[in-house]
Image (tube, rainbow, N blue to C red; front, side):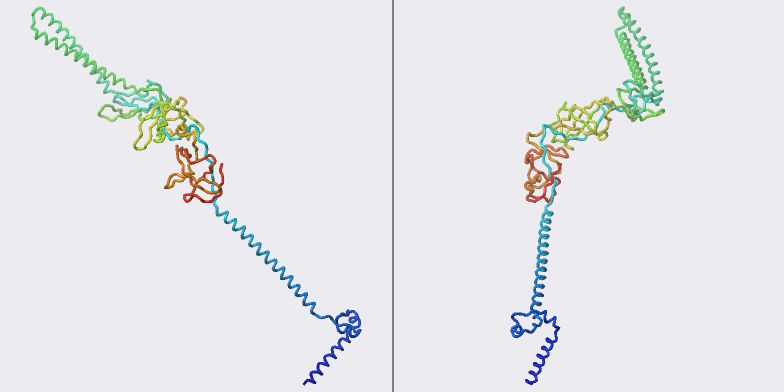
Length: 429
């Protein structure tokens, strides 16, 4: 078996030698001689192909370069994702901080103003009734008519009253005749008494009868005068200068008067040349009301119109039900700019409660169990500051202590707002 292996190895070497010898002349001539190759020192024969170890090294180098590039790409991706995550974390943290609108308190003035609702009434406003019974013969004015004092408004027909007057006048004539007869008899009997022709008793009776007839005559005169006065009420006239605001009767309507019938309003008249405005002033402002004080009046119907009035009087007492002071404001309305019954707003000037006061919007207040608070932003952190209120003006309030002019006050704060909350302040105009 060993001989067989040697023979096989020898055959292989011979075959390889033959293969080398069989190479083309130009291929062998072109192949450089390796200085360290054994065959190059042994003989001048052509050197065969170089070893394949250099090819494997290039492949390893390529793989290494690819691995480095891949690692660099992976590292760059990791770094980019880390940067994005950091940016996202910062943006999320910034978005988690709420943004609040803030405003600054405005300085208090020497006087403030409170706006209160009021109702207008005519200076004189009265219904007109009939003083006598009968039927309406005719009316001469209707609603909206401007009338003067004493102007005829309507006429009433009173047939029963006319008859009563005629009877009273006849009774007056009879009483007058009886009185004249009693007077003559009294004079005659007094002269007979002087001659002692009649007794004193008889004379006294005659004189007394004359006195009774005088009284009866006076009674008849008074009755005639009363009926004539009632008859004069057949003419319904205006009691003052004004405007007819209502007419509640018509021709032929039955007019009743007296204690046995319910009075029926014929007309309603109002004097609108001067109006009275009644306003309920809250108890907090009652001390600021002074008679003779000037106020301004506005109304929604004419928002650009400003009317001046004067406080003429007040009730000088607080209503126990509404806890308000009833105040009367007199307004000159010669031009008819206001109508009786109109709903108006009275702007009442109030003195400031102090020299270091501020005014803030009402929607900045926080009502807490420990008291009234406002949120003040300092260094992007909210602090709940206690304040003291002076006057409440509706949309704004007067603050007498607790704030400074540079404070940034949170508008429309949430009920959950607490001190120490970090916020972004957005200042409003």
